[in-house]
Length: 396
Image (tube, rainbow, N blue to C red; front, top):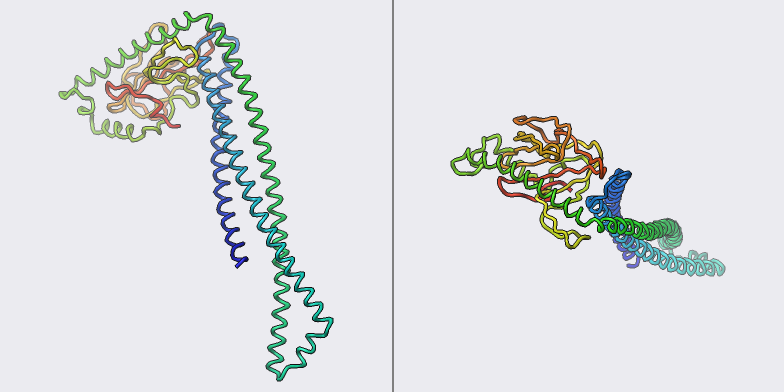
């Protein structure tokens, strides 16, 4: 019965241990992904060195970086907790193995003592000589052989358990080292996040002295956004007028209907308009987290990326229009059935109106501001006249 319980507990430990290990691996991969995002934010901030003008966008990048740093620390703490559970499971299994070793040792010692006493008193010889016939003699020989085999088996089991205990103890030592390393890394990350928060405070202090400049920068962006809204609305209205029902979808060709349906099916899975980047300006209307008096409204998202980053179409479609607003670089609008995507702040544009575009086809490059050293793409998604949050459409 005890042997069965040991086997069951070993199976449970192995199954539970595999689950814990898989969970640790999952958390570790998420943590590594977050670390790459932090490194990318560092790269973006590094590119702003030598800037002649501080900007709100830099604060937004730092905010994203701090958010990712908190996620990274959270991942470390979760992984530490999971590894801690593994330590406890290993310790529990080791205790069970040790208890079984102690039991077998006691049993084996007791059997050896009895065997020694029996041999000393010539018990076995008398036992055999007292047999009534050959069959009984054979049965007694057989019994003694089984008895000795049982003693030997107990010794083998004991040796196996001792070896298993040694392996488990070494594994436990490694897991404990892993846990200690995670704890040290977490402490280091808390120190780093304090340094980054201090950098942010210094930047905010310098920007708050230029509150009017910041508000002017936001108003300029909103004016640009309104001009872009006007341009894309003109295109959408022109498309709607082609239909007697006043709906673009009602007037789509069979091919455009397929594109529109496929676009919708890929919600949350569409590729980013830049191969790399972080969202430094979210969709919607909200107060700035650091400038409470500053209200921000975005009908799209701002993606901060590196200098020279190519801009790609997030889905196949047809270029509706390529135009520029004075002082604002180029904008490309692409039609995907009854959906539209807008890419603003481009240079070196390589496409033209009426051109058929494939998914991830390059449209141009993101412009880099000479004063702030920032490279930012403004991106929108529309479903006919309805604005959509691009973040909900793009792949994680």
